[in-house]
Every structure is written in structure tokens, then in C-alpha cells.
Length: 459
Image (cartoon, rainbow, N blue to C red; front, side):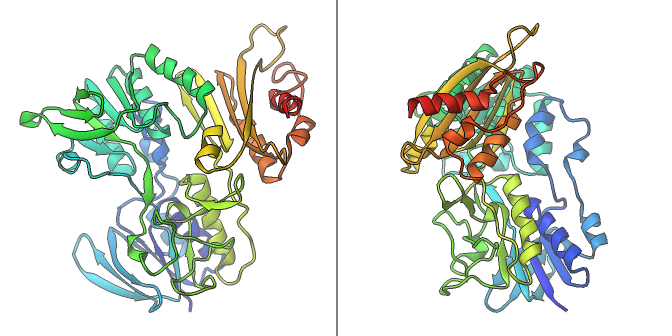
């Protein structure tokens, strides 16, 4: 009987276990997870803070019991201390009893996920231990943040990406004075270009959020008698009741250092069948797989492997583990890192490269921006949509798109362009694609086509 070891069980681990057992119900599948829960949708933490979650238990879509019913041997609250990839053994410790056990496996699935970025800033370790600085990643973090939100009068959020921006928004909505700090000079700088981030920053200001942009955190000073924390930056100091680190994530792959090929940041490199390569070998292993936040993704807009930790990537990669665990049969189609966020009355969505993202990767692109009402002016109400299309000036291939609107749902526009990027559309093709017209939903020329038509005119 084939024995599979799955190390880590959030999104990728959960779906890997399901897909393997559905294809091979007689296999011996062992799942190791250091927490006592799995499948937690951490993207809902900010919404929970703002009382937009009906029941926090619904932020889990699976459970140890559910995987156990499929036939998995669940080792919850177990810390994997060592994995010998070539020797095909692992050592795990039961965090409740301290008992250590060894498992010999035939196949290994690395779904260890990611860890919050915690730079070596003076006072940060003490603040995390004390609880006046919090992380935002798992169920325990969510519980702690939700409890803190009941009494806090002020909070500082470090990191103005999706997580930090959503937390600052929700805290401001429930009357907690918020400071949003980031080393970059724009909110959501890695997600959207300036025409959109300018609108977002104005919304934060209008709702009383203090923006501390272009400022690096240099120290956390804990107040006396357990009271508050002062976040010291390169440009000022902010004394608050609590601070939350939302400065991004790194792969949690220390166990496999020197054993599997990785990017410099620790992301395990895989082929299109999600197979990892053992260090020193030239071909991917038939028996070692990686998926989710611990692994690379193939980023279609650049045609290169990249690190983009998203639940959508984790799920699709994990399903391929089950499909390919016996032999390579189904290729990973890659990702455009399509995403969306709602802040106040602003709906935003993006796919592929922004102009700033292209410049950071050394990719030459042009961008075209257009603002038009999403439906005809004869309707009693309509709302402008700002669209930015990023494209290759030489090949005219679409590389990315961004959308912003007040109240109008633009998420599906990003999905549509995501498909176009994956299919290799040019701006000429996108300008002529079949998009519906109906006055409740769209102009005669949908804004996706309209921005592509403008790009064609500018090319």
C-alpha cells in the first residue's frame, strides 16, 4: 500500500488530501498539522472585525473529521521536526504529549504554507510575545484581533497591501482610530497603479485613517504597565493600543532547506505537474510534490516562475497533486494572480501586471487608462468605472488590467481579462471580443472592450 505524507494542512494540504484520497481511497495518507484546525479562510479576518461575518465557524470549509472520513490519518497539533526527503522518513512531535513518532513514506506532499513577515525590528519579538503586537494569518490570530477590537481605541496596521488595507478600513468603520503604515509611498502599491491608489488614499483620509506612507518601522516601544505600544518609524511615532503586522508572507519551508530546489526566498520550485526537484538532481522527483504558499507559481504575464501566495493558486495546485501523484497527466495552467478588494464603497479588481509590477520585474509595458460609466446615461443611475490596461508595446499582448468603481461590481471584469491573458490575447483581440450589451449591465461597448480600443488607438 502506498503511504503519503502531507506536511501542513491549510488550503493546499486540505485539497491535496481530498484529491489524493478521492483518486486512491485505499492509500495510506498521513496529514500533519501543528494547529488544531484546518482550511481557515484568513481573508475573512478583517470582515469579522467589522461584524460582516454571520458565524466565524463558517470561515472553515473542512475539518479534521471530514478528512478523516475520507480515510486520512490526521495528526493535528503535531509539529514535524525533521524530514529526510531522500531517506523518505519524517519525525513529528505531538504538541500535547511531547511524544515523537517516525513515519516512512513513499510519496511526500509539501503544503507547509507561509509565515507572516516579521523583520528583526527592535521590540517586535517582545511585542508579539506580550500580545500588544499581533499577527494576522490563522484562526488564533483572528480570535486575538477580534477580541482586541472590542475595547481598543486605536490601532496601527503595518503593511498597506490587501490585508493591512482591509484591517485599517474595518477598524475605522467600527470607530477605532487607525494608522496605516507602509514603507512604500502608496496604498496597495503592489496591487494597483497610481490612478486607482490615489482614489483609495482619499477614501482612507475621508474616513479618518492616518496614512503613514513611505515610512519604515524602526522600533516597537511597549508602554509601561502593559499599556499600549509606540510604533516608531523613519518619519514619526504613533502611540496606539495595539499594532498588527500585515507586511506580507514568506514560504515556510525551512524543513526542506538544502533538500529541495527553491527560489532565494525559500519557495519550492516545481514543474508543471507540481513535482519538486531534489537538490543535486536534474529532473523533478516522481514522488515529491509541493503546492500552495510553500511553492512557486508559473506567472503567465511574464512566462516565469514567481512567488504569489494566494488561496486560489493553492487550491488549483493542490488538486493537481492528486491528478499527478501516480504519473504526470494534467499540467498546471499558471496564474494571473487575479484578485479583488472592497474598501468602503470602492470596488477594485486586478489581474496580471500593473505598470509598477512590470517595472519591478524588468518587463517593458505600456498602460492605457479609461473612465466611463458602466451603463448608459439614460438609466436612472449609473457609476463610472476606471480601467487600466497593461500591454506589451512590441507584441501588443495583454499583460494586466485594473478596475475601480463605486458600488458597481468590477470583479468579473478582472476574471474576463484573466482569461484573455491566459489565452495570449492581444489588445486588438480584446477590443473585438464578444461582450454583452444590456442597459442594466453594460454600455453598447463594454468598458473592457473600450479600454482595449483606446489602447489600440495609442499603439
